[in-house]
Image (cartoon, rainbow over all chains, first blue to last red; front, side, top):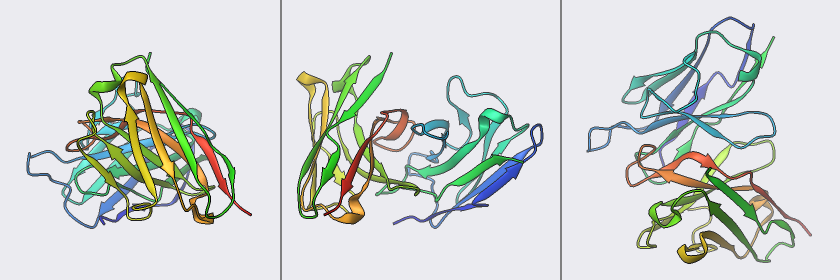
Length: 112
Length: 123
């Protein structure tokens, strides 16, 4: 199975400051169709996961533009340009290139 | 609007069985692949299984292969997960999700997830 490794696992952030989460995969996530199927999900406390980003850097509808994704191959990053209180929760990367689909361990973002 | 509503969770003894359901609305259910994902208490997300729109393709995680069976009834807009030989480590919230081609080749969990149903395996 492809192992997705996130860091850090805990991220205290001051509101208005940036935050960055790393996600590394044990194998390349580039599929033969040329796409890289790396997704980011947000899970707010007590809620279901919500997809924020697909194919590395594409924001889903309604996702604030302070969220951005980047990376290639095996190394990916989710950035929040200015953290707001509503961004508190756990963030997961998930690969959709290999079977089985696998998630990172999650990064808990909390407000300082 | 798209809605996914899971049901069927509860308390079951080790070795027992349970059938989860996911009722879909707000979209053409028969057009989409669907997945089950679970989350053990205080833990991360684990993808379990997917089923293609016409049931041609099905896949399982090794952790549930041979014990869990995914199925769907497009006429009833419903997805199911039959869980047999349950173990304590199967205790989790179980989510159904609509798969999207944008999430993965063939498809993978995308934008829409249900609220989850809790399965507790304990004697």
